[in-house]
Image 1 (cartoon, helix red, strand yellow):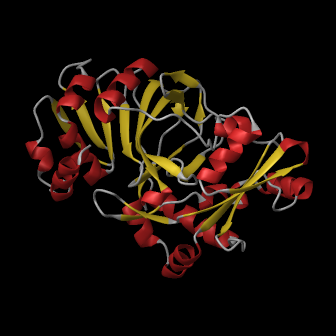
Image 2 (image 1 turned 45 degrees about the vertical axis):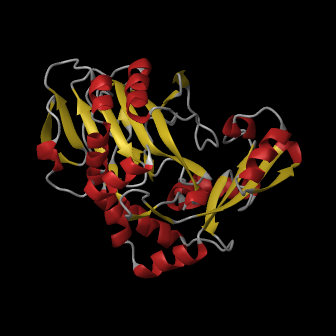
Amino acid sequence: MNQSDNTALQQQYDNEAFVRSMPQGVDYGEEKLPLHVHAHTPGQALDKWIAAHRNDVDRALYQFGALLFRGFGIDSADKLNHVAVAHAGELLGYIERGASRVQLGDKVYSSTEYAAEESIPMHHEMSYSHHWPCKLYFCSELVAEEGGYTPLADDRKVIQAIPEDIKRRFIEKKVMYVRNYGLGVDMDWREAFQVETRGEAEDYLTQSGTSFEWLPDDVLRTRAIRQTVATHPITGDTVWFNHAHLFHSSNMPGDVREFLVEEFGEEGMPRNAYYGDGTPIEDSVVQTIRGIYEEHSVRFPWEQGDLLLVDNFLLTHGRSPFKGPRKVCVAMAELYTNNDL
């Protein structure tokens, strides 16, 4: 997107009347998170429509945070790729992985490979990393028999709800993510960084401002100090933007946490989050943050062929437990780095 496009969007994104003036070809539901966009006719070509109205779609996205396109039949990795490329122009690979995924197509991946009976906490995709996508695309290829929702929360509201003392502490200290790769209970460093050699991993970590050390048995320990809030590059909104409550060891079941501490020690756990000065984040603090996310979460039932477009700055997303087979494909676009903040 060029600078003139950015300027126009900055001037227009907050116009509440824009939906009424959007181009013809789709209908808009009453839901506001996500904003539902319905095809006039089944199987309408979403890639062509979204390419023709890219700025209008972005204005909608910057106001509501997420758009749910329904009735367009986006039910495969290839179809998702075509729509995402039509909108963003270029997609991103998945490097510095926080969870295992399967590549399903050209820069299209499975949703997080995680036990169906467990929920995935609310998070901004890759906010623990040196870089992250601005836009996320999800398509529903197979709907679960029960559950499997993708809850959403508007972090413009979340940051307002976080108590001032907690907010101030995080902003002043930032957050430090400590990860140990290669323990046999989480990801190996080769998978996480998509490299083959130690030298390649070291180059990536050095460029991303991440400290590291090699431990016995080919274990890699990293420490990365990252932001806790971020400002949207177009709207100027300040949002709560970090993985502290997700990486924090209290996110694990109590018995699992106790076992890992006993087995590896507090600093040797597969992943954990501290304040940026290395002091522990209190369990009560992250519990408060998780509670605020739960209060602000919105859930919608997936339908096969749905496409969900999410602004990764404005909204967090998660996953509810589910029963039966479920298949959601994911693509990412518009690289943003910690340096840009």
